[in-house]
Length: 434
Image (cartoon, rainbow, N blue to C red; front, side, top):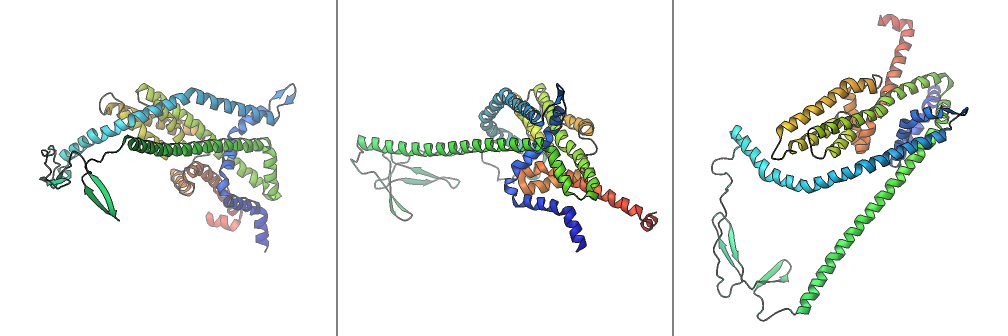
């Protein structure tokens, strides 16, 4: 049919790409990161390759190598300067977390419960059912009558006291689920060599278990590091090929489109680039600014684990709306317990006000000037895309949801405006519209 041929000519290649991407979706993630990295570095590579040295332009390969050197140097500087402090914050958190958890359970939770019971009497336990805080009754030493192995004495409150003889008892298994308690045999004593042999056997079994756990952990760690390095190298390699052949890739994609639709293709590419420029490059810059401002505020208010929390705030800012909310919860929580004694409510309120100020600056000054209005998406669309991406591909889907939604929005807006123009050009439709 004619319309099927027209549809295949216009959208056949795009549908082929979609089918291939869905079929190989399990191995697609490194290539998606490579495309993202290439898109981020493309302006710098274009700027460097347009420079002239002794009348000759810098080759794109040299420009890509130069950008990679700067990228790797920046990563090395970050790890050298901040990784020791980050590891120090992690170690400090690991040391203080059990004490903090015990304090929450033993001190703050009962205080919060009593405070709520005083203000909301309906939450208090009924009369006579309050917790018994009196010390437990400790019975005196119980003599074991002759011929008995142990003695059990009922105590008030439904508890029991059990008296075990000083020489101990022996437990013998006599059947499935049946055991017999009996006093130790008179005169039976283990020889020293039996005791040593038993201790050595137990130590060897424990050491074997620890060594196997250590070997499994080491194998998993080495495999994870090797896999991460291989994927990182693969991302750099694919991104380099894309950056070097950017114009050829663009010409190939444009050549697939029929000649009469290439103007539409050019407009769509410009719109997608404008939208992604704000969603990807602009969001990365905002994440950097957010992390720096958060770190400055945590230093000012003397909050523990400042660098760790600032890194969390900067990384979580990659996820719009939800990321800022999720990163604010641990920051305010740590600020509340950063005081020398108890909960420091003033510090927590001050840090919360600082975070709200950062988000106010981000929403009213950074987003309009860095991301721009072309990439602006309605919050409902952003929330829907985040939930759909997280439900489909987890955290990676949430990170990629907004760029994909930006591309879809650009396509929808362009084709809708084109349909309106087509309707306006028809006299009958224009007359009805007026």
